[in-house]
Length: 112
Image (cartoon, rainbow, N blue to C red; front, side, top):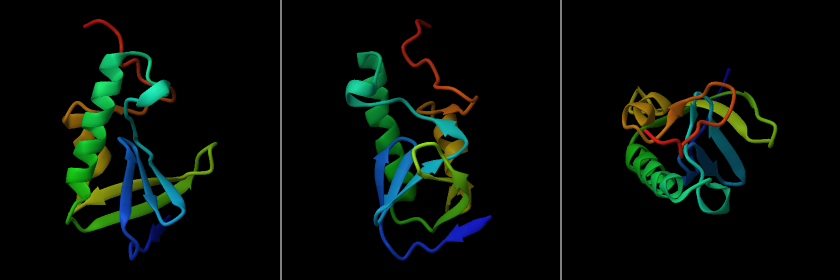
């Protein structure tokens, strides 16, 4: 595993993706709702905004550790991310703004 130095500021792209400089970092253990045209319904779009806002709040001012574990099919670095020692993916799942990654996209528009 490779730990990335975080001298550059992390920017939240969406609920499961960060950007550092020109590199995209995909949080490996979760799936967050899609935004914009990629969302399948309005509820998913709204939850995507909440997920991104929650991720931003988690990393803002925190000591963030990024442990690279691979590369996804889009060329993004897959990584375990922690903020002040807490796993960011687990925290987002507990906040109900992300789902555990199960090998495919979570269905965010299903009726309860």
